[in-house]
Length: 86
Length: 414
Picture 1 (cartoon, helix red, strand yellow):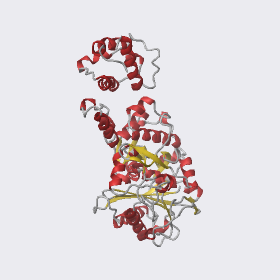
Picture 2: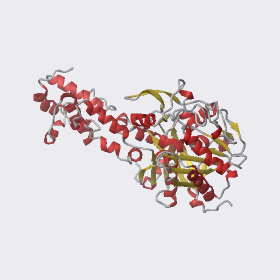
Picture 3: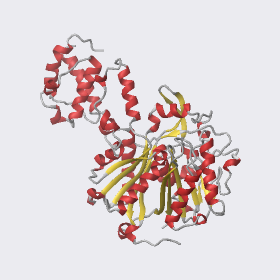
Picture 4: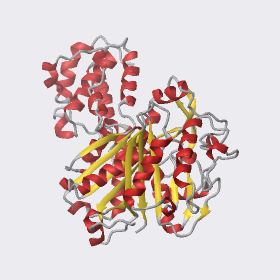
């Protein structure tokens, strides 16, 4: 996956986790929490979905990297570059 | 002798919120019961396959965001719907109410099986790797979940918990709410029962293994207590939560009052895991009558627990015969024949369906009785068609469960 595909994948997960939110104007540089109603359990959902969908294990110390779309894509790029988006 | 209590020791029902397989409000539900309309339909669940169930179609987004529905459990969602509906119905000024004085007491037959089954099914696809076991599992399966979700949704900071009481739970929740009002633990109690049981394959498989799961070509004819052709239980989901208040508070604010809980009793069979005990059931009924200061002949309508298992139906009818054998005016009906067995919600739903009789003077029927089992014969049985009974003053509601738990509630017209 390239960066735009990883972004789409993360967006897809966010749509499931926050089904009431309109994510069409999500600002990639701004933190998710400033733009959406997300709590710690929701962030764990992001981690869990990446684990389930792509077998990516994110260590707890790295959770801080999932703060915004930009930081998430940045963090995931080396982990997902070899994965085909289906 | 009718007992005499101070008004602050009298507990009354001032609101009803419910969802049943044949109605999502008391008015719709009552209309279905009088029209003879079943809520049972075909149903499919993993591993068990095609079966029958009573499924609710309430609007879960009326009081929850989609995010909340996703986060919580079905029992929680049913509870949230019923709790909001009962408070709206009560006419309480919710925004001005001290919510630290509201208690939530929710009867459940079981809780957690649905989520645990879902998670096991999920990790099966990952070769049972528990690293994909959901972090939502524990908050969804703690036994207080359905009651706790109600407090989260409605901002209630008073006490909340569930009452695990097998299929007596609906009555048990109601009784618990009343007792907490009497103990001054709260000023408003949201009390009754809920069930998500049709979402767990285990309950269907368990009843099937027990030879107690109903089957019928026509789903609407599958739940048939007292009938010779009955072949078991139809599992259903649903919920019914009452708003309970002290009579002194309710009358002060001019509340609409559905009825007063004038008698209740709970006891145990201490005799078998699953086989009911008619001696203990009749003792429970008599204890409730005694506490209400009533005789059997005073009861206008008995709402039975009967689930359409041969032994269970006969045992309850034996108990009823011993108590109401000489009660000429007492009418006897059964709501499960319409909606199946709503488990934790059964007791509260079945009572609710009968409460409008205080106003319309009609006893709804027990449907699907084409060949009455003579061992279930009771003079007062109202079969297949509703019956005009005139002035109704007292309704007695039976609710029994596995491990020999019995509960009886008596409601008086106000």
